[in-house]
Amino acid sequence: MKQSLDLRLGQHLTITPQLQQAIRLLQLSTIELQQEIREALETNPLLEEAGDESETRGETGADEEAVPETTPADAESGEPADLDMEGASLSEAAGDGEWEESYDGGASSAVSRGDGERPDIDARNARPQTLRDHLLWQMQMTPFSPTDRRIAEALIDAINEDGYLTSKLDEIQQILARGAEGIPGLNVEPDEIASVLHHIQQFDPVGVGARDLAECLGLQLKALDPSTPFLNEALALATPEHLAALGSRDYNQLRRNLKISPETLHEAVQLIQRLNPRPGGTVQSTQSNYIAPDIIVRKTRGVWRADLNGEVAPRLRINGVYERMIQRGNSSADNRYLQDQLQQARWFIKSLNSRNETLLKVARTIVDRQRAFFDHGPEAMKPLVLHDIAEAVGMHESTISRVTTNKYMLTPRGIFELKYFFSSHVATADGGACSATAIRSMIKKLIEGEPPNRPISDSKIAEILAGQGIHVARRTVAKYRESISIPPSNQRKSIL
Image (cartoon, rainbow, N blue to C red; front, side, top):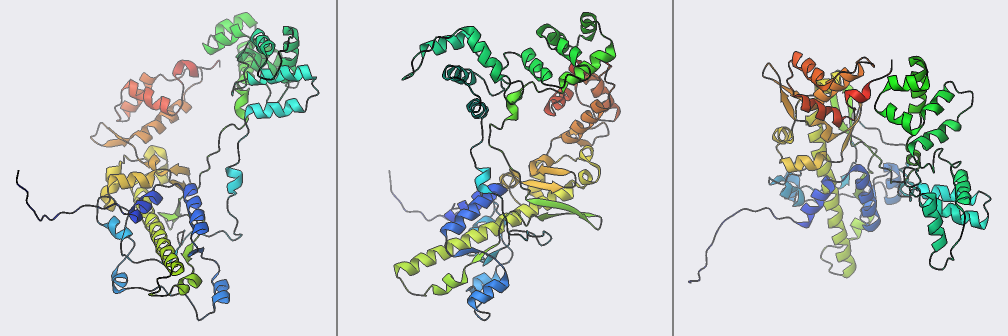
């Protein structure tokens, strides 16, 4: 084996810390970005929110405006570069480009909030209340004896998140008899446990502590006003055997067993359908997910236009007071610290600018491709994939995927995630293509207009769509129907 030295030229993309920061900020949601900005403001003294200009002048003097130092290379650079992994522009975004001394978190068309208030982070991150906590709180408010309190705690521990008692009374009796570490056993009769359970079943939410669906619905019906129309018929219907027939849509058998007219059965079923089969779900048990739109779409002079939401992030700038404290050529520890913080602040502002430039460019391209959706609704949605947008804006598909994940657009038709506007295409009879989102909307519209007593089958829907030039198989119709949470035709059949 012979050793030798070779000189080779090549290109490769170096993932610098600045590039990693730019990529990470690009894929953050609006709420996560707000928290990231708050953390940066707390840890970096060179960063500050851009407040009222008059206040700044009053503090630093009208003739002492902070002017960033620039080099000839800075002056020659143009607009902020896009965050694209596959091109050199991303390296420029993290390199020696034009450092913006301030970051405006919103678009020119967005109106900033005047009161200065921001979302309550503490309230959003507060520990959510569980059903068990809710029931234990009510138990503390109930005048139970020490024995009944032990029984109530055992019963509440056996209630699941839906509000149902998952253990039998004799199992609760055995658990109480065994006791626990440091807690002696308790010998009680099943009648005592049933009595305490009856008290718990009066707690909020109504229907909690039931042992099956029939008991749950019965508890809710008994809590209604006795003068409620068709209440007696609904109580007669809320039994295990009748609910089984109701689940299979055997209305003829129900009318014969209950000896009531179709109209009366229909009203009783309507009353039962207004009840909650999972009462425990009404108590918050999971962390709430808040959505703040990144993009606002408006129609101006007949043209749909997308702009950044100016209320979702504060405007940032370099603190002029600390910047002027930096002494060129001074190698003291304090001066090096300020220089490092200044560089990090500039990187952070640059990354935010690049993030917003990329997000706005992608959003405007999506709006331009989906103008028919904004004019006519989901049925006019056009087929669109990541490659189409990547090709239009000159970026890689991975970059488009990062931009459209957990980013939301506020439109006159509602709030949609950017990924909502991407869908596969289905070939039509004339050789064109139809969006899968548009097909789902057509299926939903057909089902909403079907006769209640004669629902349309998946095969019939496929035939209707074929008549409109859209050829899809029955199993495809079933897949699209299930994706929008619509039950099959045998479960949609109504009495009348």
